[in-house]
Image 1 (cartoon, protein in one colour):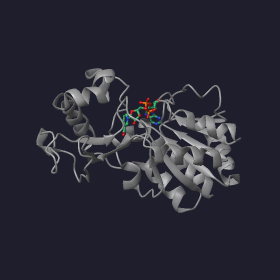
Image 2: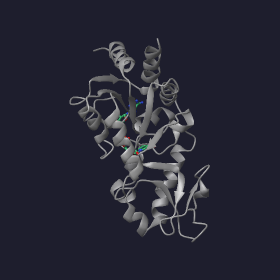
Image 3: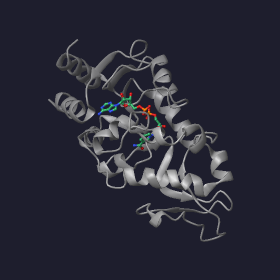
Length: 248
Ligand code: NAD
């Protein structure tokens, strides 16, 4: 199927659906200038995620992990929502899209105007203290390359993002599963669909007979199995075009 036909087929599915949800991953923010961490030039070329993204490492040596976090902040601090984030926010405004489940921690869906956003892996714009559980929002997570300290107990704070070895926030997990159970169509946008348990969301939806519309620059683990329509291309181009077709 060529791109325009794939987009038209997806638009038809969406027009007929009553409960559309979206699962997004790092790919939706690439055109905002945030590289997905797996590609060449990505963060995990410099830092081994098994070490740097593991909660045990943070507990042992938070200063070392903040070195990586400061590099991550440098990559993300000037990023703004791109047309793909905005198209999803528009679909929600029109009452068509019920929720966005995102694996991203960059806050760009909210900045684009999406209201019902489930943050599966947390949000880098909040800090938490592992010692006394104090939490606070951060306007701009820069801190002059000095790890921020808890105003209550003085320990080094951690961004409220899910590290390996940490649980998915229970509310986010439960709500995502409930949404996947209710959906009759799901947009799977810019995710390699391999990070569990987020990767189970499209499968739960499919089990409940939802149509799976996948949007990615390349085929993924789900393309040949549960995907009904594969829209290949950069989502900064394909999602606005899909919105146009759904609204025509
Ligand atoms: P991933 O890096 O495993 O996969 C990204 C996917 O996006 C790939 O399949 C790639 O082909 C696709 N892609 C890249 N550019 C695209 C574009 N312009 N249009 C469409 N598709 C595009 O990402 P993941 O599946 O989200 O898993 C990685 C983990 O890393 C997640 O847990 C996420 O929390 C985290 N992460 C977050 C951010 C962020 O917040 N922006 C960035 C990098 C990684």
